[in-house]
Length: 147
Image (cartoon, rainbow, N blue to C red; front, top):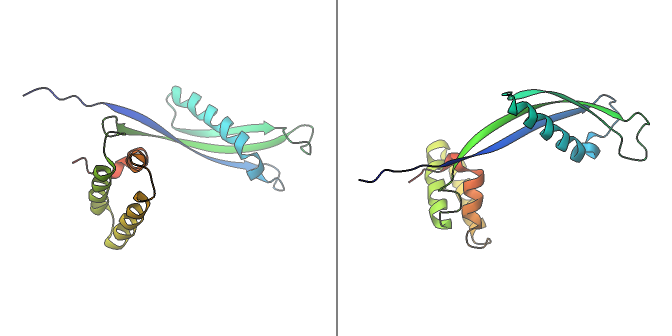
């Protein structure tokens, strides 16, 4: 019997919440800049062992921004997920779909399961070969049955 090797890769998910100190400011307008700032802050803090924290930024980007910029405060959380390297991209669409169905069946109620499987099945007809497998392993690996 030969020894088995398992490899994992980590995927990092950063969640951010931003608020402008001036309630009249449209925060959506600044999201691309805030996203970059928040990711940098979160990753630097993560390197020090932190998983959540507070952040702030001052942005002066648009012509109509005040001279001293717009102040924002926010919070971030960071989650790490392990994804088996062997599964990512190595399954056929059919194998990935079957594993996802099996995994969902264990964690979902019947109505939710039927709806999810129906949507995935319908999408699989529209996607090129390999796209469904990549999507499933990258975004729903926690539901793969691993069979």
